[in-house]
Structure formats: structure tokens, C-alpha cells
Length: 397
Image (cartoon, rainbow, N blue to C red; front, top):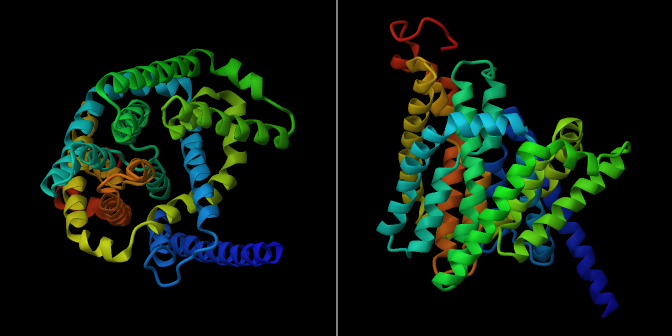
């Protein structure tokens, strides 16, 4: 038995090492062509997953565990990006446009699921996956194209803040729906989740500095262990009370502020890159390439419609800030990509009747939208409306 275990461990090390090296090559390729790495990681998962060219068998359980940790670290670092002041400003300025964004972007995913004959719960999941933009891809687009100082950028960031905070309520609700509890149990679960979320948001906004002081440490090692341990602990406790573990991690990030927030973000980032890559790989790892091909047309249609609805959201949000037409188009192009939250939402359907189809559609949708967004953002100013001097006299409208 020990010899067999040693052989399995050796094979697992070989598989994991080869996969990590392969992901490194993909990350370098993504940097070279100025595209996000997420679509390439999803493609890698298809290659090594069930029905792929070189399926990994021995290390599948390990990849699954690291993927779960990857979700938590993704959401932790997302929460670390916001200060209490940014949360307050985002909620004040982004509520109206955020509600419009939710309505117009949820509808295509929900409607497609209904047309495909899926159940209501799966339709709600696909609606959510279609709704939320990828904060990571959006941030990279704005940085790479030097648009952080543009007049339309606050509208983009306000929408992202609203979407991220809305996920704190959305994920517990759909988690309860997926669990299939009766109406009274669902109401109790959702109520508990919303109360917990509201409490932690209040703590983050009002007493973030005090929370940060509790985990602050002079040593980077001590701080990293404290933040990592707190993330796993809160995520696990959240899962116990039927609140998404990912949302628990997101709220930990929100609760930290000041110098601790900045140091924690820098320390956690390398871990996030490692574990998050495993998460994206494992998500598509479970999708058979043949199923993805079967849903490629619906995924492509959803990408086109979803791009249009993001342009509509950005147009409304940027117009409220007095941004000219070309700036509104740039805002829309930046928001087209879906990513982290879309994959997290689809992964909640594991074990349900349409789980594989939902994962396949979402994987295709994320692949196509994440590839399209940087190209749209780069060339949107060449559109006649975006470049017209009649609608805008400055490149930073």
C-alpha cells in the first residue's frame, strides 16, 4: 500500500508540475498579446479534463481543493480593493445605474436558459453569470490603455462596486435555491445571510481600522498567515450557515483598511495567482469539450447580446456624470468581459440537472467575452460615433 501511495504521489507531482509549467507559458503568452490569462486557463482545463487530450486523473482531487481556495483568494483580493469611502461613494452614486445594469444584463442569460428548456434555478444562475463584469479584466484594460484618469472611469468603477456588493446578497439567495429547501427554510437561510452581510459591511465601513488593527503585525509572515487563516476560517463558517464561502472571503477583504489593507493585498497576490489559476482550470476541467462545442452557438449569441447590454449600462451610468458619447462607448467596451464571478456562480450548480450544460455555456461565454473586451476597448475610439469631434472635443470625455 505504501508503495502504491508513493507511485500515486509521484504521478500527482508530475501532473501538477507539468500543469503549473503549462499555465506559466500561457500566462506569458497572454502578457505578450495583451489579453487576460483567464480564457487561456479555461482552455487548459478543457485539454486536461474529462474527454480532453491529456486527462489528469491522479491529481484531480488536489486541483479541486486548490480551486476552492482559489475562489476564496480571488474574492478576498477583490474585497481588498475597496476602502470604506469607496464603498459609501459607490453605493450612493452607483445604485440607480447599478439597478439598470442588473436588469438589462440579467435578462439575456435568464431568457436563454428558458429558451433552452432549463429549470428556473439554473436560469437564475445563468442570468447572474451574464450580469457581472470581471473586475480583474476591467482593471487591466483601464490600466493598460491608460484610462484610469478618464472622465468615464468613475462610472465604470461605480458599476463594479455595485455589482460586487450585490453579489454578497445574490450568492446566498441562489445557494439556497440550488439546495432545494422548502420555502420557509429558504427564507430563513436568505435572511440570515443578508443580516450577516449587512453586519460585516457596516463593520467594514465604520470600524475597518479597528478590525485591521487586530490582524496587524510587523512581520509580513505573521500578517500573511493571519489574513490567509482568517479568510479560510470565515469562509468555512460562512459555508456552515449557508452563506457562500466566497462571499465570506470577500467580506474579510472589505473589513480590512489602511496600511494593513495595502500590505495584505501585496502579500496575498502571488498566492491568488497560483490558486486562482487552479480554480479556472478546474472549472473547465469538468466540462467535456464535446458539450462545449454543442453550446458554442448559444454562448456566442449570449456574448453578442451581453456586450450590447453592457454598452447600454455604461451609456446610462456615464451619461449621469456628463460624459460625452465617446467616453460612454469606452466605458461599455471596458465592461464587456465576464470572468471570476460568472465562473463562481456557474460552479454553484454542481450536481443539478443542467450543471454540465450551464458550465459549458458559461465557459464559452467567459472565453468569448474576455477575449472580445480588450479588443473592443482598444479599438472603440475608431468607431465613427466614438471618434466624431461633433460629440466630443477631448480624448478624455
